Image (spheres, rainbow, N blue to C red):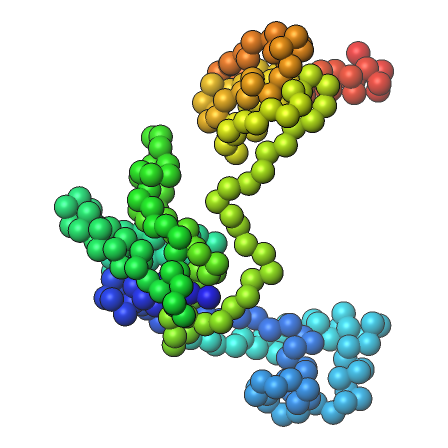
Length: 273
């Protein structure tokens, strides 16, 4: 486990803020605390065991819930240290993201931070092993009109899970994930009209256009990727038929037409037309 937000915090790029968070407790959790069944500190006098069973009995539980909402409107206050996005220069927003955003408008200053962080992260090691196989600029991975929304730096972990958490005192912890993503996958195609023993250099974005072509459907012209024509046998229907490209609005109109057909069919079944 690698806590990159902690590294950014230690390097002065990331600033934090402490927020108050109120969480409503369930009736069962609250009563468990009052009984002393929970390891957490109770918020009031403990409840005898027979009262707990009585309050959680299926017949009485609805009444207990109403009573709880009125008299035990207990909210637990927790203090949570989180990223101050406005004041931070660099941060990973969530643990679902393996990308670092640079929060600065000046392009020259931004470039300096990007270069410095790429150099730092590329050489980062733990137990004699590099933490990242590669550290990308966003331009190496993304393209198109919305590239500004992408993270400025993307991380390709070398067997390490990246966490955005700020609650660890250490930069690294031992962690063995049950599974992990890889940069490269396997593409297999089999069936009528598919070449046997054909090797193909496919990308993940090629799969959707190829499937649409196989089913005889047009490919939206804003879709990334291409139809993998080299996987089809020379005289097959798929090879003879050229890929057809349409405006994305084609499928929106098709959906509206299908809805209209279904509406007419339903009215016929009801005898209204």
